Image (cartoon, rainbow, N blue to C red; front, top):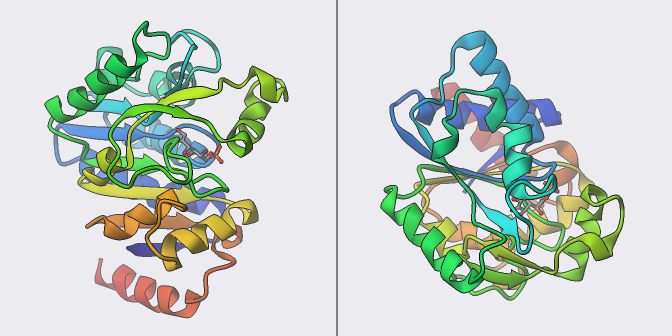
Length: 258
Ligand code: F6R
């Protein structure tokens, strides 16, 4: 695991965008996209680079991490609509190459299996962007998710529905109870993973993910098994890490090598 400590959300966005840009400039790329507040500064920076620096997404295929069950793609709070609003509609990524699980599929179990196979069929994910929930979830893999799980239907934790009520006019009851999410095994197969976390509300989850045991109780900790995972943090999110000095030293050496 590589830990990158940043001074601000904007810097987190720039560091994560650097990793994505490096892969996109190499040629056709498959990106895994997270939604929610954490990646907002990353998407803002990628959009800026598209507009001002000619970063092109024409050769990019994208798969979102998850989707709410029951919401059609065109629902304003579906993750399909969200990722379009926050990122895809502002760059030259071909909509035909944007994949999201169909939350309104009649057979959600079959839809999850289809989605997992579609990722494999696209050659797998080159760079998977992730956020983390305050309870340690990545994607919507809530605590106790199997570390080898594939894309599937999951029940959202009460804490997750409460946290996401802000997107549903503050009403927990409006947040769907079920979702489709890439599994921890699916996420683990990405060739590179970049997790961004902001704010002290994420500090305990970040500490457990980075420094705790690998455990289904903190699903993010599965990234300890990932061959190429980078964790990009603002000061609040990093505030409970116990080896900050070591991470700073390693970061200074790595930055010096580049
Ligand atoms: C979103 C996702 C979730 C979020 C997590 C953090 O696609 O998969 O794991 O990354 O719930 O949400 P925010 O960033 O809104 O705090």
